Length: 254
Image 1 (cartoon, rainbow, N blue to C red):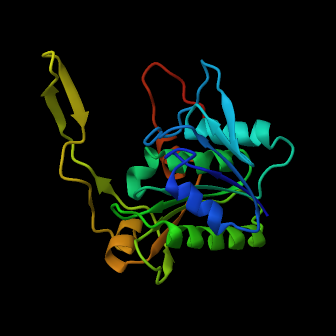
Image 2 (cartoon, rainbow, N blue to C red):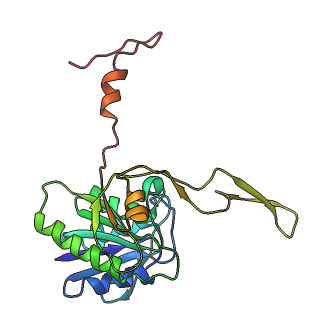
Image 3 (tube, rainbow, N blue to C red):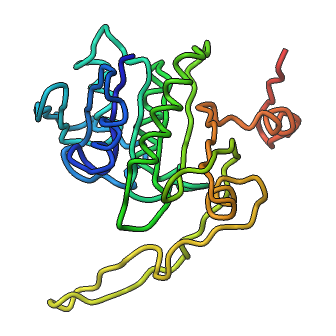
């Protein structure tokens, strides 16, 4: 099995090294940002060149975003030999609920799916100090199951694993997490204002039965959330199709 590993914590991060160890015996390629790129979402570098450095056997650092790393991995480094699965992580912290909209880890996996590969984003939903071994082992087992199942369409999974030995897993929908809406204003030593988004006090989650947040924090098991690339709201396409907008002709579906 050919495995492509990436992340948003950097090519030398402990989480991605744990993944590489968990896939021992497989053909593992690591292509990741050369430094931390957390919360980059699906940013891609279109207006500057990228540099790729080989940092070890089948290990490459890219001076760009997680999306950049997976893009150049599949279209350049592994050109003509796509991976069987792309695994992003293990992230140093959770990516639950609406975190997926901001996460560079999820974006790396999503880019793999967009390019036609099965993909998994895996995060350790625990504070430091981190022990990534259990999350990495689960991700490797899940990846092998995914590849053996051979779905006809690329499958994208977001995985969050609690700390410690894993007692189980559950497939779950995305929940909702809140970091607060504060913008904290401070003053630097030169008297200029600067701002921190999100405030203080950490994240809170809504109590939504069956959500990934509840599964991880309430049940203490891993949450596996299938994601889809088509964000279209099919119900509203039909509902809004009956709108009339003054001054314009509405074209109806045949």
